[in-house]
Amino acid sequence: MPTLNYAAPTSLDDAVKLLAGASGLAKVLSGGTDLLVQLRSGRLKPDLIVDTKKLPGISGIKKNADGSFVVGAATPGAVIEANADLKAAWPGVVEAMDLIGSTQIQGRASLAGNLCNASPAADSVPALYAAGATAVIVGPNGRREVPVEQVPAAPGRTNLAKGEFILEFRLPARPARSGDAYLRFIPRTEMDIAVVGCGISVTLDANGVCTAARVSLGAVAPTVLLVEPAAKTLIGHKLDDATLKALDAAAQAACKPIDDKRGTIEYRTKVAGVLARRVAAIAFDRAMGVAHGATH
Ligand SMILES: Cc1cc2nc3c(=O)[nH]c(=O)nc-3n(C[C@H](O)[C@H](O)[C@H](O)COP(=O)(O)OP(=O)(O)OC[C@H]3O[C@@H](n4cnc5c(N)ncnc54)[C@H](O)[C@@H]3O)c2cc1C
Image (cartoon, rainbow, N blue to C red; front, side, top):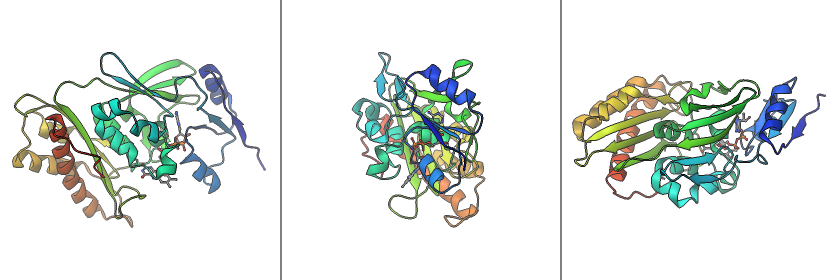
């Protein structure tokens, strides 16, 4: 039986060396809420596990002087949810992360694990796409920063090269009158996988006209989608009935879902349009300073 090696390096260099030098399958460990399930079920048989949690900068949240944020890749959901500054600036990102699992899962689960597990239904990912977040990646060739939407490649696969891992996420400073939101649809009230998820971030002018928007859909394609045609239906418009109708149609047009026990293609497509309308309404309200508690 092959041996499973475990290492918990304390320097980024050591982590990269271990991952890049591994002869068999090497996996990065953050909270382990996906990885350990895959190990236990026998679906994944790595030769090496590199635990990132002792690495400097991998956990914690920093607000920069310009209002942007750095969120360590392995920061647990519970820490993200408890950060009042982050919640005020990016309520959609925080509520999406907060939807993941239960109290126990929240103590471990991270944004990096959610993104790199590369499930099309991952809850925090549409909110990160909508936020225009970037991922700082460390590897054998040094550091690079990429938009988060460049990380997932296919279900269960990322574009990270051998030896690379995510160190942190960056969320930009928000212009005045900006708001974001995330909603998912699940058949029960919690602890389920999204049938569809939707994240939207907008900036408005003083008259409530949208000047910038990003729209993202989860669980309707092999990877989470950034839906630029849907964002275009918002930009230059107030959120009136015509805009909502155009957004709904653009969201539906982007869907290429699977048919499974959670929903048919037709159902998922329809729900994507409905969710986009609802999420846009919350994001616009938040941009105009109308409070919305957690959306779940
Ligand atoms: C009971 C239960 C309920 C759940 N509910 C939800 C839910 O509602 N919504 C949802 O979206 N998910 C849910 N999940 C899945 C899981 O909790 C999330 O995907 C979580 O965010 C994974 O984070 P983690 O830190 O535990 O990742 P890990 O398990 O540590 O890692 C997951 C994957 O990402 C890779 N990885 C981790 N960190 C890095 C890094 N820094 N750089 C590169 N690769 C990395 C790992 O190698 C692995 O392939 C649930 C899981 C359980 C067990």
